[in-house]
Image (cartoon, rainbow, N blue to C red):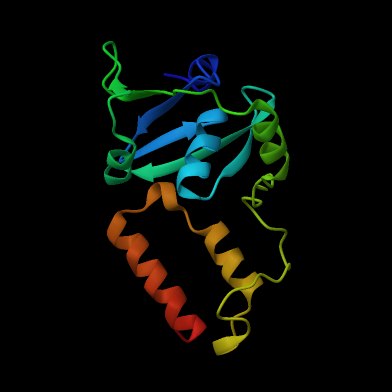
Length: 163
């Protein structure tokens, strides 16, 4: 099920939980409901496929049990969806205000510019700078190495850094 399919079911009169890996995830209004009940941390990410940002809250299986009641049911079509029918709808205005307060999570750059200092524990320890380590990582042919060779490479980098 895609994110756009999940968001198509969002409403103020029910809460939907989606099983994703080992976690259950609630989106938008459902995430707001979870936040009200549990104060879990909400994440707001920009979704390129939707050209919009989406708020979600994830939690483990055992936390789902705390929502169990007569109103919670698993979808007949898909056991990875749980639906909680609410007695009273979620306050739309309160949701909109809360949504505006959740900070947008910035993506870290995949390849920091060469020479840029990173906040790493090594700094200049052992005569190897952050930029030297970044350059070694960039030049390592990961796609042509075995897992053992990769582990040896990491070990070699750690020893050069004095760790």
